[in-house]
Length: 103
Image 1 (cartoon, rainbow, N blue to C red):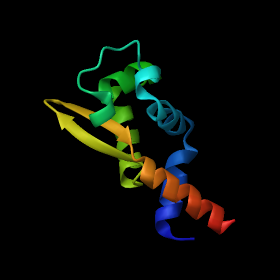
Image 2 (tube, rainbow, N blue to C red):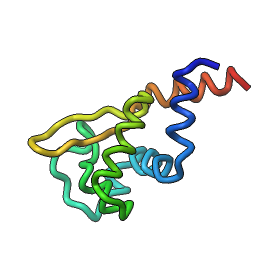
Image 3 (cartoon, helix red, strand yellow):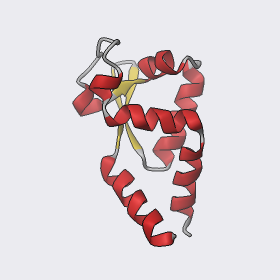
Image 4 (cartoon, helix red, strand yellow):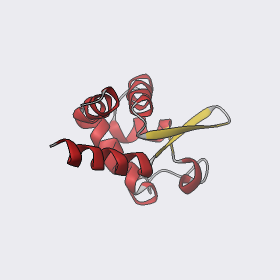
């Protein structure tokens, strides 16, 4: 098993990070209660909204998102002073294929 696959699986082993990935699958629906700062379809969800929805400190959520980004599962975009995250569905699909090929 290669290091990239292990890193992605470790990132998803955390229940909160896994929940965030689920929410990012449908950002408009999952974050409807928060007015978007930018187009969620293009740049994703603001880390402020992720923190509010998880109930965790913004610094904790930022660390979680950095882990997901290093694993290649999300992409970060700065909009002004805010960082937005969106799923990299191509990488998620590649990860699923790699898992299927490994077991």
